[in-house]
Length: 259
Length: 259
DNA sequence: TCCAATAAATCCATATTATGGAAGTAATTA
DNA sequence: TAATTACTTCCATAATATGGATTTATTGGA
Image 1 (spheres, rainbow over the protein chains, first blue to last red):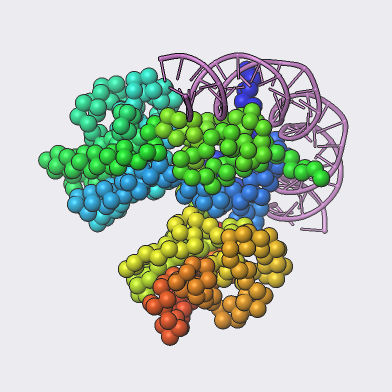
Image 2: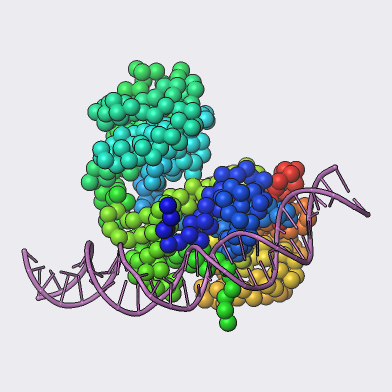
């Protein structure tokens, strides 16, 4: 079985980047990189050299250890909000965080993952699955992520689920059932208690394109005590309102990220 | 003259990323990418396909246009503060912004550039050279950037200047003279009025590693009216204090970014 | 709506480029 | 200081990227 990608070297280079990204902040040694990516050491060396030249990798201090360079930060900042989603949603997040007093997250879809694009903390800070801006979670794990998954068209949903099942299980979590996802679509929101993170309640509403594709979700994270079922109804209603507002902004921008 | 990089395909792929990053948010067409990067179209096609598969590029809406994908944002967020610089400096920035009422920036070196790692606005928002977090400017253009350049060891400084001279001129700005840089080192800060951005005063102090390498700078941006010479002295003094505090934090973390 | 023009995707023989074994050099560690 | 481990460089080889040619899709104009 030959992998006829046509761009082996590039793919290997990207694999190196991802390996380094997954490594602790002390960085990675060349040998580790080679091993992790299944490369011979001279090959890894050449790829690393090229990435370093471009600023994609840097040496840690004056050691030989490698970590991600700031070039990725530069590019990431450019790419993060090319569609204007984060900018469009920020006011909504701020209002929601202020009104609810809880943590609000903006999650956007990226392939088989949901990425935390923005976060607003009100009074306190909770630990969430993705944790920080830039964090990612497989679609189907975490409220925002699962909401996006649930609203995907049938075929795509199945494909994503198939791809993510093992990843989610490997992380020690349950894969949402068909019924779960159907319920989310019907109610228009996802509600999780004690599922992805212990003691934490999460809920999320989708942000859809005019064509009905889910591109993102607004999620809330709170402790169980702070978000009982009674309060949930109100909060969700407000979140839905805000989501609709964001959708309107996206729809009115001609080059929005209508996926 | 042969470019014996040993990783042509990877370098070309990265060039594609950078080309797309530089493009407007509507995205780029395959042909444009090919032309911009000096590639044949089938070659560009293969590279783009690989990058798209990895989430480094995405299609805009349902068109064929390409823009940066969120994978870069993910990686960037990971790499942005692996050294802990931004985290270490944030409190300082917040205090400085609150105390001065102006805009404070954290600029870090990345190769021949300075990248805006963080920004704190107090009462108002000014237009800065880099503009936003993630923005970059050649070393030698802008107060924070120039401060870092000035504090580099002689040989490195010359190398950077040689590399950046044309870039800075191309942007319609002046290249700092040897005397300018020497003065910055002597005074321990950089002060610019009306230089990089019209009507704006900028000033910056360096953040040095224990070994005496400049890795970053704290910069202030304000309107001319708000930051007269008289006030400048006090503000700079406070900035220097905070910079020293950040240096202390960095020095005490064993895997800091001592470059 | 149709047609022309332009762009994107696919194919494939070729030569360039990446590859990885081997060997030398530098950095750790005992 | 010696022994071990990691990094760098070299180069013949083979696998891979390349780009010309072609087909297919998309876009824009009438």
